Length: 357
Length: 51
Length: 72
Image (cartoon, rainbow over all chains, first blue to last red; front, top):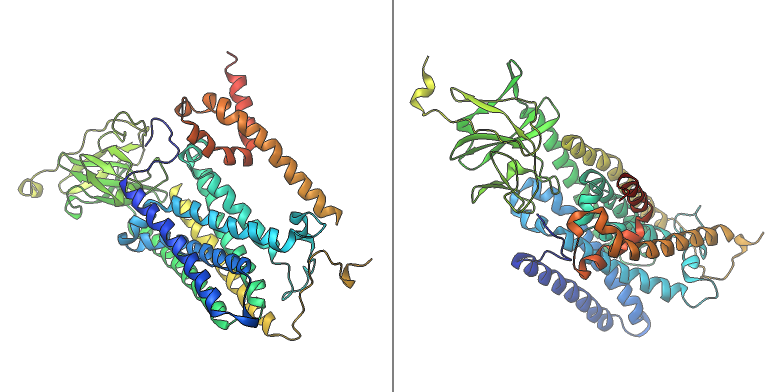
C-alpha cells in the first residue's frame, strides 16, 4: 500500500530479513574462498579470481534455487510464507551476486584480447553444433539479461504501471532464466574434469524444483474443481455452509469455473470479496481478518471486508459480491460489483432458528 | 483470470521441466562420450573458422 | 564476425538512448505519468532508472499518448 513511493519500504521484519540475507551471501562467498584457497594447493591450485567466479556463481544458483522453491513451498505449507513476504529483496540480491560473476568472467576471460570483450563472449567459440564444446557463455549472458530486467522492475512503481498481469508474465521469465543457467553450468563447468557431485547436485535440485511446481500446480487444479460453487437458482450460487468457516477466516470458492472469491465470516456476518489482492494477486482468502481488515497473507495489504476498499489514506480497491444466507447455506451472486462497492454483510441466523421448517 | 494465470505456471513447468532434464542428461552424456574436445582460447581463430 | 558486432552495436545504441531517456523520465516525465510519483525522493527515482532505461520504448509511447490526451 502506498500513497507515495519510497526507494525501499523497509520495516523491522524486512530489515532483519535483509540483514540475514546479506550475512548469508558474505558468509557463503567467504567460506567458499577460504576452503578453495586452502584445499587446492600446488598444481591443483585455482587462481583467486577463478575462485571468486566459482564462489559467486555457486552462491547465485543456490539463491535462485531457493527462490524458485519458495513459491510452491508456501502454497503447500503456510510455514514458508515468511520467506515469500520479502522474496523481492532475495531476488535483487541474487541478481547482484550473479552480476559480479558475469562481470568478472567477461573481463577475466575476454578482457585481455584485441576483440571487444562483449563481442568476444559471443564469437570466441562458435561451435554451436557441438555439445561438449558448446559456447555456454552466451547462455549465461541471456540469463543475466533476464535477471536484470526482473531486478530493474522489482519496485511497486513497475507493478502498478506495467499492470500486474504484464508484470507477472514478465517475471515468469525467471523460469526461462533458470533453464538457461542449468544449461550454462552443464555445458560449461560440468564439461571440465570435475567431480560427479556437482552434476548430481545440479540435477537433484532441478528435479526437486520441477516436482514441487508440478505437484502444487496439479493440487491447485484439483482444488479448483472441488471448490466449485453449486448453482442455486435465480443466478445465485451456493458456496457452502456458514459452519464450514471459522470466525475471521475465509473459504475460497470458484465461481462459474473462472473466478475465485473469498467468503469471509466475521463479527457482522458473511461477506464475499474477490480472492485477488490488488497488489500482486495474492490469495486474500488464505489470509484472515486483522484489526477489522482482511489482510493479504503475501504482503499484508488490507481491505475493509464490507466494501473491498483499503482503509484511508490508502486507495486500493477490489470487487465485492452480493451475499445472503438461507438457513445455514451461503448464497453468492456471481456478478461482481465494481471494485470498492459497499455490500451489507449477510447476518447469520442463530443455530436454533436455522432449522425452522 | 487469476486461475488461468495459475494454470499457465503449470503448463510452463510441464514444458520446461522435461526440457531442463533432457538438456542436463544430454550435457552429462556428452562429457562421457570420447574424445574430450580441447578448449580453444578466445581471440585465436581455429581451423574451422577459416573460409 | 560482423553479425555479432552489428547486434552488439544495436544493443549498445538501444541502451545509450535508454539511459538518456531514463534520466529525463525519472526526474520529469514520471510526474505526469503516475500521480503517486509526484515529489518522490531522489532514491526512488534512481531506483527506477535502470528499468526505465531498459523499457524506454514502452514508456515513451505511454508518455506521448498521455501528452496527446491532455494538451495542457
